[in-house]
Image (cartoon, rainbow, N blue to C red; front, top):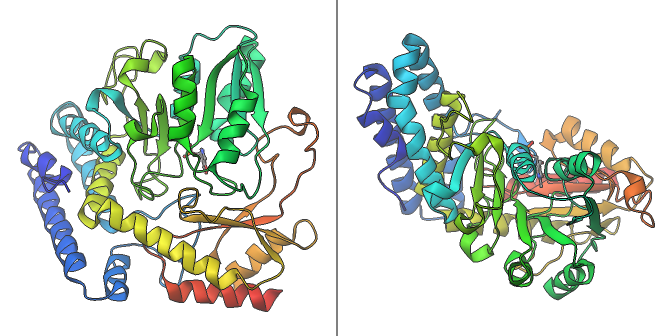
Length: 434
Ligand SMILES: Cc1ncc(COP(=O)(O)O)c(C=O)c1O
């Protein structure tokens, strides 16, 4: 746990903006109190209710769709708002002075958070931007193959589709099983689809459709000896799973901190392994990974400040504790929905493949998933995600043999602001509708 918090570091260097310094010191005190309360809580219920009080979400809202967007804690938004005010009071001195230095501190903190070093990590706006940068920074020739799956999100996919349209690369999709039986099955599928022309493997860490956690370390053991670049779309993992990019063995890792990391919207991270930098050279990072550079340009410093506070918030609660809670709630949800015959699980149960996301196909007419989601929202104030099918982000003509595959599914994300009472409400809402 990093007790020298980001807000404290920035506050210390804010002589030119005393009001901001004062309020950041106050935020630091709030984070310390939260950490102490959480450590001292005697039951799970009191601990997580205390945490829920830190959020701005409407009372009664059951937000089971962190996979689309998380809710930022109040302190992250307050820090961003304060930073915005300080910036507008004296833009040039503030941006290139204290706040600019603060942005560099958050890079450091972000790198530690995912197990990397500062020179390997850039602050971005989202996963899509990171994936676009990586794909656009590769020297691929016509006919070179990129291997991916039919369960990727557009944010991790359209960069390869662009390279196919404009550079003549070949895009190969692994048809993903749903649910997968085990990690061996997935590793076997990856091996089966490699060819001498495969230059890149591009997989989500946690898939957007089923929430499966890909066995990346085992995949890296196959790709690295062959010189294949392992590119990872990590939109759905940091802030939910405890990430160590070195242990995962990936060459690049792009993420969206406005999902599970609970940062202000428009916050992301990109990791490029030191040893892979000679093969990944995006225009926007020509002048390095610094938060300001000639090749990247000016950015939204207030959002970056809020991003740093969101990392402090996670560190104060403990990454492992948060992961355990996300998983515990997800298991509770699975147990509650297990007895509903119309729901078919698309996500595997093994702990190494499971996460804080679970998806069920609804065995009813196509489109009934949307109707059920609407009902949950209007009658119960519950927000869930509808999931169409394999072709959500893959043109149907790209995956012959799977044309029209429609899961008619609902996806549930369980994060630290959810609880068992909300899940009971979800289960009775679904049962009542069916
Ligand atoms: C796996 C995956 N990749 C990428 C994205 C896109 O994220 P962003 O819009 O923050 O770039 C998402 C969003 O849901 C996702 O689930």
